[in-house]
Length: 135
Image (cartoon, rainbow, N blue to C red; front, top):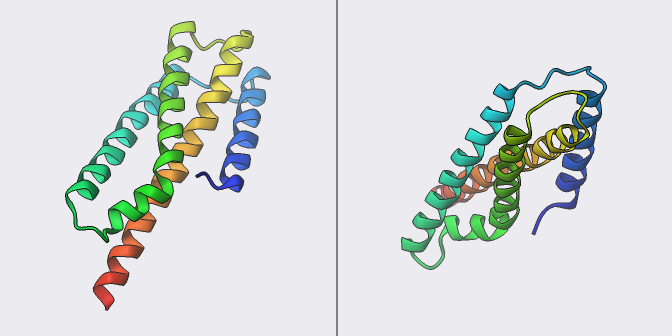
């Protein structure tokens, strides 16, 4: 499933972003939330595209192998980012709001998790395809 170190790093960074936002040390604007929301849509497109290529490929397929390895954690990051940024947009992003602070932290947590898993998925695909072509 998910690499434990990636999850721990995402949690630590999410808590740090939420804390710094609450203290007013980092200005999180609605634009950041919108960018994270857009990236979750792009992440879902990448995941679905990889799944579709994996389905129509042959049995021993690098797409299937990489989706099986990173797909579940990537899906968690995508859905978490989508939900947290949607709720952040609905409640508004103000420094004095505890709810806004929590959802900014959750948005950061899932966004970081999603980005790391997208990078891991693409790296897995590149390594699998290049290794196969070198043979």
